[in-house]
Length: 110
Length: 113
Image 1 (cartoon, rainbow over the protein chains, first blue to last red):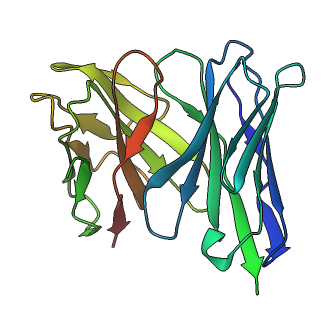
Image 2: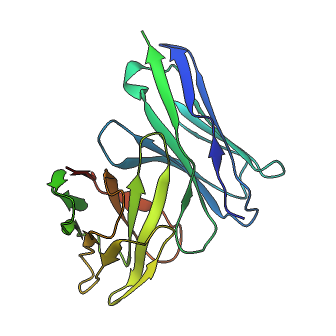
C-alpha cells in the first residue's frame, strides 16, 4: 500500500546538524522528494533522489536512501533559524499523484 | 515569471454557502492537483486532472467539485455538503512524463464562520 511515515517534531540547536527521517512502503517508487513548508505558505521543493541512488548531496543538504529498508533521510548541516519549517517527504510511484508523509516540524533554537 | 497563483489568500464563508478557490499556472503543465492540509497533518488529495476536460477524484472528494476547461486553470468549489471545510488548501501542477516534481501555489486558507 501507499503510506509514508515521518516523526512529527524535531528540535535542534543552531549550528548543529538535523536529520529528518521518512519511511515508505511502496518499493516501486521511482523518485523520492523532500519539500519544505514555511508558516502559511505552499510547499517548496528542496531536493529529490532517484531510486537507483544511495546518496545525494546538495550544499548543506544530504539525502540518504536505503531501498532495502525503504528508509529516506534528509540531513541539514549547520542548521540555521531560517531552516525552521515543516519538512515533507513524498514518493512517486508513477500513479496518480505524489504520496506525502505527514510532515516533520523542525524547530531550530538559537 | 512562471509559477502557480492561488487566490484569495484568505477566505471566509458562512455555513451553507458554496465558495470557489482559484488556481492558475503559466508553467504549461499538463496535470494539476488540489490538496487539503489540516493542522499537524499531511496533504490529502481532493481532486486531480491530468488533461484538459478530464479530472479524477482523490481520497477526500466528497463535498468538493472541480472543472478543467483550460490548461492553465483548475478551480475548486467547496460546497455546502462539505462538513468541515475549514482548512488550508494547496494547488499544485506537474509536467507529464519524466520526473514528476510538483510545483505548489502559496495556498488559500478557508475559514467557515
